[in-house]
Length: 89
Length: 219
Image (cartoon, rainbow over all chains, first blue to last red; front, side, top):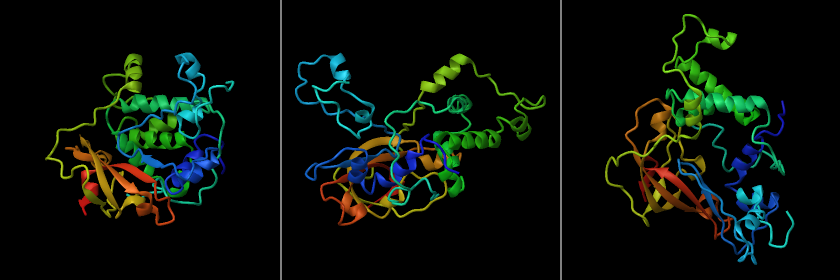
């Protein structure tokens, strides 16, 4: 009995994120160059982590509101970069 | 126990269904299950680990079919029955049995709101000095105990390095079996991707896990 969306993606992510983190990120649209180290944090005790997206280049003089506009859901779950400085939300 | 939830390393569960955006709850009943779980949990009859362990004991095929909040509802229902918060007749009728024991103090809206955001303190006094120090080489033990275990199968028997000591915490294996926990040291340990997944893994990549003292041995 197939079920609609709710967290159905959980098993796919949980099973493969550890054995193929680069492949999973690729499937979600994020290319990680070979020379970039991937550190997988399996949050398996009671310590939880927050994803902090990398600050896009050329945003040194942006205020909080314009920086916030560059942050997306995907960048907060670590599967995408934040929008670049010139991009429209 | 080893259950289907510990699926790290399997290939066969299919492509990731990407959703560009999604609501917090996909249906109203999901919000009710989240609220009920928080409310019923407030009486302290089970720990988070007991809740996890209840879900893990679902038959594997059922576990894979059930959605996230369907698993919650099953665990909440079973734990409420097992702990006597409700009885079978009440579950079937949806009404309180006149003769059933009433939980006290009654849950108030204010308390329910508090339960939603309150985190139980899991830190414990150190039972003994930490066995390991940052830089030590350890092996994750090859163990398959009853109860809830937070050492994934993919890491068992593998060599790692201690990165940090996190202090002593309530031990999940105890709470899941309803036993009072004295606490164990927790360590942040680092495995290389190649140690876990073989030479085909990227040599730069690594894994960080937080492991309880009894999951580890000197290597």
